[in-house]
Length: 150
Image 1: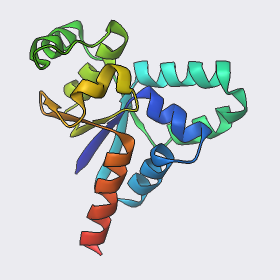
Image 2 (image 1 turned 90 degrees about the vertical axis):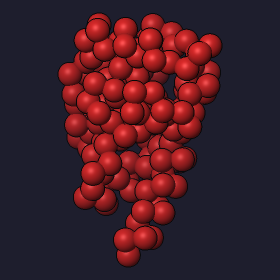
Image 3 (image 1 turned 180 degrees about the vertical axis):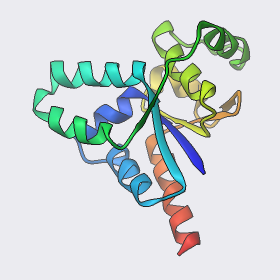
């Protein structure tokens, strides 16, 4: 089972435009061995953005939200653990800690994000068992897995 934790920006992108984020969610739905996850923090952030800036996409957001299993937000202790285990020289802004710590706390395999500014230094790296990847990377991996299994 592959556990894929989605940053809020993936939910937003999948709701408002065609592209890797939407394709990733569609592929994941076809794989019985993939679980899409996020936490309440991520869902709330995504929904606030869509309602405020892309209200016409709210119905689509609600459909995509149904594809994702919502988990509890991480504890402060988990956030501190993430800070301690980030690679040397890498810092995450306070707003991103609940996302990274959320992925760690539920044992995700991947954290998928489009946030190149804050997560870019972590792309391709693993923090406490969670690899940080872009949506296109995750989509390509699911496509390869589908080809191997067919």
